[in-house]
Image (cartoon, rainbow, N blue to C red; front, side):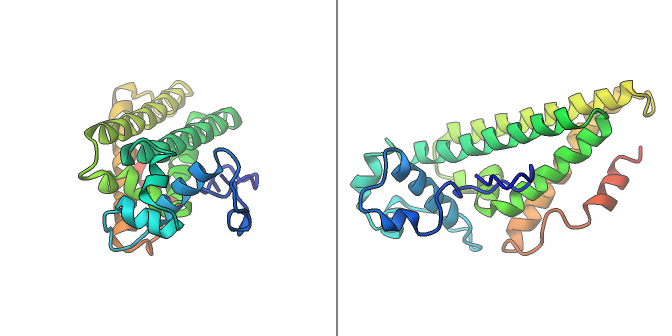
Amino acid sequence: MNTSGNPHDQEFGSELTEGETKARKRPRPGERRLQILQILAEMLQNPRGERVTTAALAAKIGVSEAALYRHFASKAQMFEGLIAFIEQTVFGLINQINQKEEMGMAQVKGIVQMLLVFAEKNPGMVRVLLGDALLQEDDRLQERINQVLDRVEASLKQSLRIAQSQGKDGQTDIVSMQAALLMSFVIGRWHRFARSGFRKLPSEGIDVSLRILLAA
């Protein structure tokens, strides 16, 4: 995770300095697990969107498949590790934004921007968020990522309610629709990013887009 101080600049796997893992013959406890998740996330960045197998993952790391299963009981558990990183990072950043910004609309804009920049910094995670990487995997993984997205939408809804109470326009009946629209926009930008081979950045033109989306 990036610790540069920029709350939107969170990147998976940077806990290990470059070359640090290769320099040690025996990784510290828990370090191998992190390395496995980091390599899995990197393999998910393949623009062709091919399914990652445990055989390919083991070969990429330079260990046997049996070695993988000494750290994770199943491939599903590896994906659960990635989802846990997404959940911890995204909601940690949402909390930071909400603590920093008193105005509800500033919270909304900050959350949307964070979601888009997080995707740019972690392209492999986009395939997890969209469910593409979870096809043919355990059904509970898709259920869990759906729960994460529902929580994000609930956070947007809460900030929109704050904005309404601060006198934006008093139309409290449209808060749910606005939150759903914003999530649809974010997910659409994630799809565009993945479909372009991770070339079309999600945050492109974000200021103009938010003005249009929040004009009502």
